[in-house]
Length: 229
Image (cartoon, rainbow, N blue to C red; front, side, top):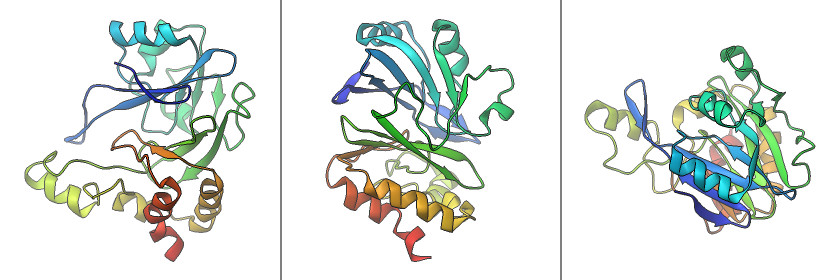
């Protein structure tokens, strides 16, 4: 259920969810902080098996919704871990008024993980996404801004849309709909320069195969369209 991805970081793939008729696989990450507590990124559906695996690693202290689209499974995790702090992407609290967030994520890391996980905020018209960098494992963590689906994942007209949207490529790519929605490109380029400065060894995302080699070069390829504009 949990797979070791690097030093003090694990991943787990969850169930498939449907959004406007498109099927999306789900993935979460678990990071163990220096004090032994856990940082849960983009939690997937919580099963008894997953809960047992997580509890074996450490105590859940922080549950993180990294953008305004990934919040579906928060309530079950909040119920299971009532003492955990709930951290939401900017503007998510306005969308999920049923959830009492303890913290709104920003470009400044929370004191609980400062020095262990760095972060930036990338904003476009579709979503506001917090991109994290886990220092110990060298992992850059995106949510929806990078995606990759197998060639046979979609069918019918959705297959055509997925190809046109750059959701089906040889490596994870920024979908075309997100590229178009970056209206404040000067600000986005500034954020990307910080991401490029991270000593990345791998890139993880919610929907796509992780990149585990030549991560800095990969990131520059993935966002070359933004730098060219």
